[in-house]
Amino acid sequence: MTVWEKMKASSLLGGKEGVIGLAVLAAVIFVVLPLGVDIFRLNLIGKYLTYAFVAVGLVMLWGHGGILSLGQGIFFGLGGYAMAMFLKLEASDPLSTKIQSTPGIPDFMDWNQLTALPWFWEPFKSLPFTIFAVLTIPALFAYIIGYAMFKRRVGGVYFSIITQAVALILSILIVGQQGYTGGVNGMTDLRTMLGWDIRTDAAKYILYFVNGLLLFGAIFLSKYIMSSKFGMLLLAMRDKEERVRFSGYDVSNFKIFIFCFAAMLSAVGGAMFTLQVGFMSPSFVGIVPSIEMVIFCAVGGRASLIGAVYGTLLVNYGKTVFSENYPEMWLYLMGGLFIAVVMFFPSGLAGIWDKYATKYGWFKDKAKAKKPEVSTSEGEAPAVLTDTSPETTHESTTATESTDEASKKVTRKKADKVSAIDSHKLKGAEA
Image 1 (cartoon, rainbow, N blue to C red):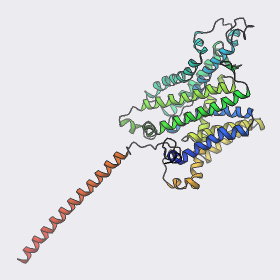
Image 2 (image 1 turned 30 degrees about the vertical axis):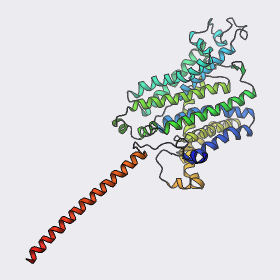
Image 3 (image 1 turned 180 degrees about the vertical axis):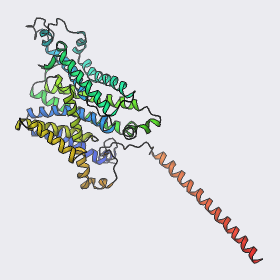
Image 4 (image 1 turned 90 degrees about the vertical axis):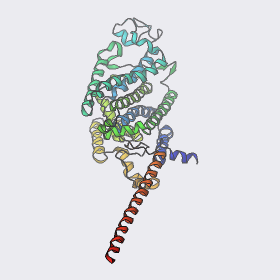
């Protein structure tokens, strides 16, 4: 079996269609865009890709888990602020801040008359701790929210409203604590990381490719989860939650896990956003950015990991083009784009692919097959709880054959008995 045949047969990659979809996306991100646009636009696209982490997490949380969170900006902001704290401390060395009344602390702390670095800022002088914090702090915060909600069976629209309220509270808290967070202006003037100037064109190219590689890592990790038994249970939980609960599974633990996983992906996107753009502010934490992140996922297709990336790129590209060319009307144009997608393409860009592209070429036969409610074009497992392993299939076949054989024996015995009775009656009549 060749490498190509092994890739096509891989359930992790999603078969032939999944392999081709990933290859096309990789070609677009790593070849077409770097060669086709200048460094300014490429850095802008790199910023769009940081939002794609949130969209991929929402595919797992909302598309496959059935849990709509309107507060993913919380975790995007926590990851971004964690990285911004490290970069700000590096930019606030005593030599660079010698004109301040208290050298060696961030400028906004000096403006707010703080005379020492707060204790919770101290660990962020270390890059390894910062990376650890980017992953764990949002996950821990998501665990607290998820445990409080899901253990009490709070879900649906109530959970969405609660996450929205938490996003609002956090954004107000960040703005109010100006001396510790930079307030409404956020953390700006982030220049270097371990002495490496992140503002140069070469650094922007490197960060773009690192961003793309991490995004593909997030997609592969999500595919791995969906191809596992947990992925099947997740889809079953979304469609028939009570049935999964009555089967003996603790549904709340599944919800907590996938909520924390989506939070970690969002936090990685926030950290890369800080590096890519060079600042972080509370405008990326509140209700509006959280809803926009849900729109990215919906436009791409909430059941498709690859579609979520394309949806993020399309929406943000449209936002940039409309705001540049039609500054007075761009909000109306963006609203029209969202309405058109919801009305004519309810399954997003991935739905267009499933409906039209699979009718032709290599995927023609696959399009004729009956598909489950959630598209399995990228290898996601259908929502079933049956064991389809070869051993189980063999046992099932053997049992069926045994049943058929027994049924035939019973039928023959009945036929012999009827024949004997008829023969006895015939002899009696002759006598």
